[in-house]
Length: 313
Image 1 (cartoon, helix red, strand yellow):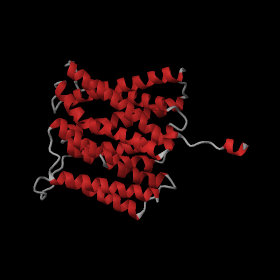
Image 2 (tube, helix red, strand yellow):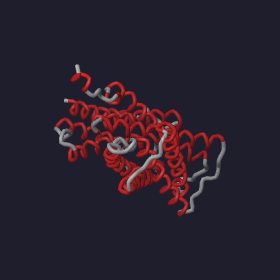
Image 3 (tube, helix red, strand yellow):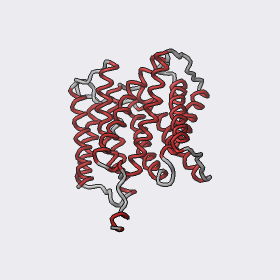
């Protein structure tokens, strides 16, 4: 009887159904970021070439998201967070990289490509995670099925970058190239965040990293002469949504990573291009019915599905 009582119950976030529901919600929120950012640029009168203002816009979003999570920590945990010097340094590094550097690439990239294309290209984060997990975790090595899945996914990324006649390759370094760079940074920092949450509260890790990253973006944007001043009901509502999106998605995602293997969680990223493409088509009037977009979505989804099957084998 004592032995049975001594068995520790698995955390609720390791339940497959819960993982699916929570991860899907995160991907839905991140997928909605593509059209939301573009609509935010329009609402705040931020021109495509105004990089400084884009950084300030991103900075406001993440500063507020970080403060929201840190406030929730104080209200829910009812205690101050005490960190060592090494922990402060680690959180600062995470914030500068995961929020600051990643979104420098992401915001510029998504403004120089379509929402549909950007959301699909961003799915490369899953494949980066699979490769990184091979080198960092003994129980998550690459296999032939994982390689096939990655190849299929990248074929999808290539297809979406072809023009309408599928004969000439069209890619923008500051568009799709920057989105891919952001995806790579996201993969690295997600694993680093998993490491930090093993010894620190998820709310603190996520909140502080968002705040520091947002501060980095805002300061850089101001130095570049950027400003965000056109506050209306529409623009403010857009910013509030992006703040809630960021705080919820990043916090929930880090909680999943804390209690599950990287490969098990990252595979759900295949939903981001699906949600992103659908929401971009709805809110931005972009076409999702082009053959290349449908084929690309199929390849990306099939590729990551195969990777998932290999991981659970």
